[in-house]
Length: 273
Image (cartoon, rainbow, N blue to C red; front, side, top):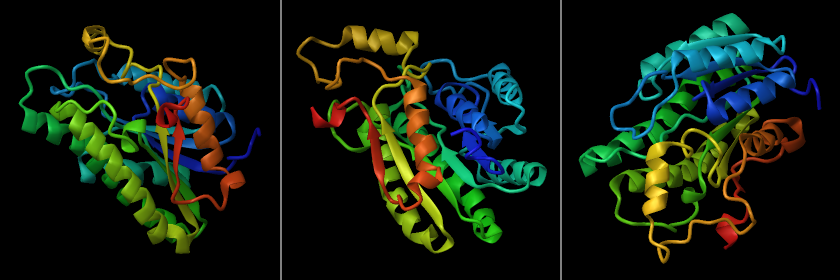
């Protein structure tokens, strides 16, 4: 598969660590240049540490070690003007954009955040941030006239109501991820005439700092034994970043050239259970 993204440029949000970094390195290994965007600062409502400038620098180092070009920009996906500036900078240096991975998102909200604020904060990042990302890049993709592929990072919580508890932050997460399925289908219709495909990928829990952190472990430890079943059907608690990168690499490749409007679970059977 080496070189199947040669000459392509991939815009990836949340690229400083976790899934975003994994996707950047995977696509770079197969020839892509990268526009890497991350906020690189803490958001007050979030219960766990977010990525830093040093994390983004590590992504740059790993991509450059593969002899690929990378433009790294610290920007907040909630800020449409900042996202447009980031995309414009990347296009200016790398010559276009062919792949968009709208990956940036947050999970657990810290205790003490007022419920309306918690709900709104998650929606603004996990939904409006995705809208800002795609609308910053899609016009350039259309103007280029060379097609392309967009993948939105959803969640198994986009396709089920399991685990509902009245927690405002989690309701914001579930609402946002459900909404991404609708956007996937709507944007697939919008962009199909330009040969731009739009899909979403929906992981179960992934082994990243969004899950592996002190706040999340405390919540899991406190769950009653007869609480909601959030386990996978297959005998694995968490999948790896590479499992999601593998799915995305297929979705954005020519091997999936007629796949669009699809919500693809990578869930170890979570949704079948």
